[in-house]
Length: 479
Ligand SMILES: Cc1cc2nc3c(=O)[nH]c(=O)nc-3n(C[C@H](O)[C@H](O)[C@H](O)COP(=O)(O)OP(=O)(O)OC[C@H]3O[C@@H](n4cnc5c(N)ncnc54)[C@H](O)[C@@H]3O)c2cc1C
Ligand code: SF4
Image (cartoon, rainbow, N blue to C red; front, side):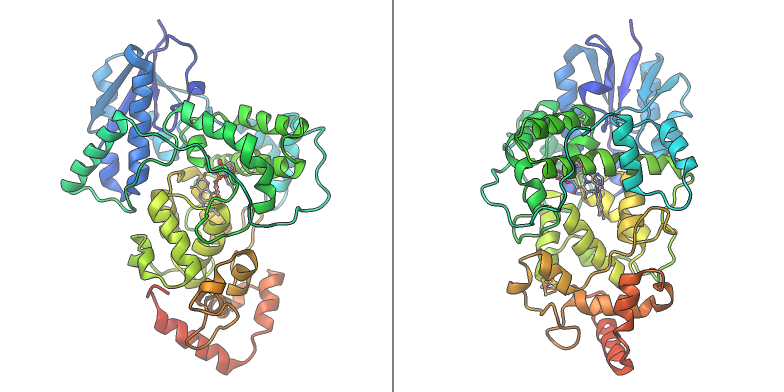
């Protein structure tokens, strides 16, 4: 008989098992939820996923509720194996448990040793585009699908059908009762509870992927990098939690997108953008997390030492008047999710401008998003969004003013602030914040041509002092 396979909560898809008879251990530890203030819907998704998997596997599975993982493993009294965990902390723990064998990672396409060999050969920054080109070749992907010569015109989506709805069941009802009880007993969450929006089973996730490939992928490239008030997802797949929970295996999803491009169901531009995210960025971030040891969390050289304000930490969108931030923050509060553009341009950008501590922001992203995972935080939040990784990856400070938000969104028309104004009652907090960011970091920005040019345009010392004073006064108040 095969050994017990311990499936972690982010290893619940079929590709984490070897055969149909394998015995499975699943562990629920309430203490994990007590340590950090998670989004309520994230907590729901984790428990729902574990319990649905246990129900699917029936007699083969043992779902143990214990105070700690160590206690659950000791209680089994037999040798156990686990697929390589997705975080350093979980891996370090697994290596301390007697009788627990750690297997190679699954749920990613590229190989650790292969990435390390590629990265060791490079000089200077590791560039996602270089890695992507290398990995496409190595895995023989998108070979005969021509790269579009020009970026497609971006426009708000028309007639993009929403993903199939999720129907909650008795397991979800029990999860909700348990979380209500835990809350009453003192465990704290952020965000609003709501009917479950994100897949908790492989079948739900697969249905969403199929629907995305058939109906949403064709519009994907057109709407990428746009922000539309009240429609945070546009044509994107909203499958990041399904990939990160291990419900979906990325390899067949990438091949299916490639097929959609070949048979003409989706335009090549859309397929290339989707695969670039799922195969390019996702694999690159995963590999970087393990390649750079120790992790580079919080290594910053921009002036960024302020804690997150309470309204942001609590996802209090009602306190915010700035229309873009209010809508995106409300989306996080209500769904535990936001698009890449919203995360970078609205959320991360605001923190960068205000000098919030990168490590705090990474912690916030990880707790508040259903797809939040430790391995993603290094490069996306610390590196790309907050430029606090000593430029180890190819990025630059993603600081933008309100005019940029206005160009890519429909928010500014209905906002009480003016995107072009940095001073006075109508001053857009992003435009004034951009100026403040430039002045605060003036000595550190000379290497970035875009920001150095923006700084060079802001020479009037009186105006600079007035903007700085205005934003100092705004302080940590919600804008
Ligand atoms: C500040 C910041 C924080 C982020 N935090 C997370 C996070 O905690 N977890 C997370 O999975 N992604 C994170 N991302 C990346 C990205 O925003 C999400 O993966 C994406 O919004 C998911 O939406 P989707 O499923 O509709 O993706 P789609 O655009 O439909 O792409 C398909 C899949 O590709 C992968 N993918 C696409 N783009 C990226 C990317 N840039 N990085 C990594 N994977 C990508 C995801 O698995 C995604 O589900 C973050 C980005 C930023 C800028
Ligand atoms: S004016 Fe400024 S705060 Fe208002 S929506 Fe536009 S960018 Fe956001």
